[in-house]
Image 1 (cartoon, rainbow, N blue to C red):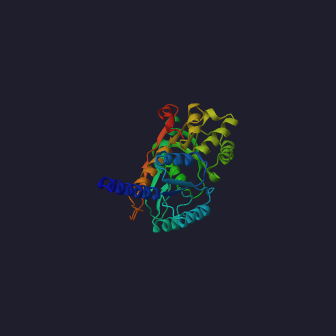
Image 2 (cartoon, helix red, strand yellow):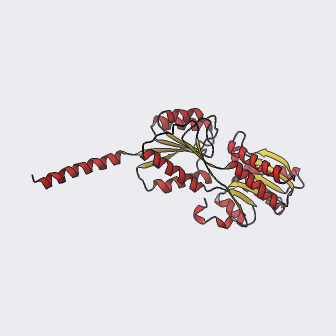
Image 3 (cartoon, rainbow, N blue to C red):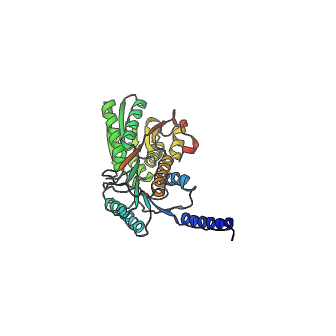
Length: 317
């Protein structure tokens, strides 16, 4: 055999071996939000897929825990047993999922949380800056009210740190900036649900002849508050604010039915997570070996009737 033929044969063998090695390098990522089908959980997934669609060797599998911490624990166990390479987790409860996160990373599985870091340190947490978001809502609502009036809060479910922090920021802004604004009520809504917020808002309307503003700590509940206020014929007198910035709420702001929301680009969160995972997995870095979770916060944007058009269509989720 001629030298050229031998060389070609060797190169061919090496190429086949190389392609075989690349084909075998498949990365499995488990996506475990609090529930599937919500605008923000859909947007985080789409943000990730905008990266992973370019790389067919990255496989993402979604799990639906239906807002139940015990189901999240079960799915975490499944991901560990099935030897996933990474887990993207939106924890229902920061404490309840800590043992699962520790177990996953001890097996070399990278864990990145969304919006709520578990007590157990892990590789990273990509979050909306929730205290800042609540503060922005308080500041902007106060401006809209001329620095005086009665306001109420539709709270998150008990123990949901995300909503607790938003409320904390809101109360801080009111206390620091608007001494003539009084918080006349606060009540939590089970499961962050619109229909529960309607019931709570009706209660606020019945017990407060004067109600000038309502902060619902997520957009679903803000939309519920709007429905109740509109049905009672009092929508024009109440500035209703949400937080998250989902597409349907932005449309209601443009219609003048909701006063504003603390907008967060959930697509950008998902894309950032995917890029972090791509980097760590392709470089075989494994979980971060640090004493504290790396927290990356996305600053909020106060979307009002005057500013909402600054959010382009491709960033509306």
